[in-house]
Amino acid sequence: MLSVIVADDEKLARRRLVRLIEETGDAEVVAACAGGREAVAQTIELQPQLLFLDVQMPDLDGFGVLGELAGKASPATVFVTAFDQYAVKAFEVHAVDYLLKPFDTARFRDAFNRAKDRATSRGRGNEDERMRALLAEYVATSQQTTKQYLDRVAVRDDGVLKVVRIPDVDWLETDGNYIRLHVGASNHLLRATAASIEPQLDPRSFIRVHRRYIVNVDRIVEVQPWFAGDAVLVLRNGAKLRVSRTYRERLHSRLGACADAPEIATP
Image 1 (cartoon, rainbow, N blue to C red):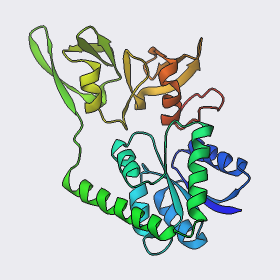
Image 2 (image 1 turned 135 degrees about the horizontal axis):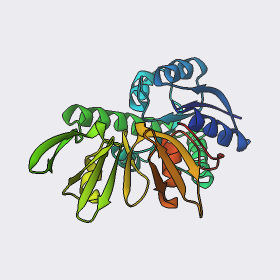
Image 3 (image 1 turned 180 degrees about the horizontal axis):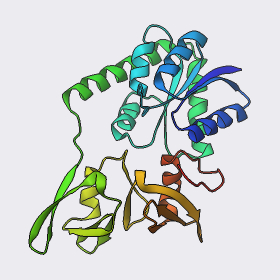
């Protein structure tokens, strides 16, 4: 039996990983950690063969965990990420396994089997070299550039130029060649397309739930099942938005729920 540690700050996502790992029959989860620093301590103490490591954690991210573990522990690592596209690209270049949320059971099994092969392989030296290369590249890149997301926009209202703070926006809605910004009881038209503005929004704060809607995650209070795999999203102000089947699993994962769990309520 392989020993495994899971590190993910989202409780439901963490529980799902533990269940999927134990269902393989080939591994035992020796610790399930809710943060990066806990993961470091447990990994050094328990020396697991596998580590399923979330990239985005509030106290210490996945790359910080790797930095702390350097020279102290070297488990075969499977990274888990919801939206860090740089990380995905780096993992592919350096042949490091990763799970991009939301992932299904088949994708998990592929990653698990590759990690298992690497953990039991005699060629771990090459794997450790790739891991160090990935860490060095990430640190160098993050020191050089930090992506700046849109924090405010100017809109015209009856000839007056108004400034709208992006964190104040409840949701964005496509409206022809415009985007309608819903802010509390008011709304404003911005001449832009969803394709142009979505990459400028911080993915930690906003998520697309429909081809027409991009929602502020902090405003979500409930997800209700609907017809044909769709759902209805309820916001703090009582607004209800349709969630299309295409984006539903991604939304569940972002809220910390798993794709095969019962319907979820509050995040």
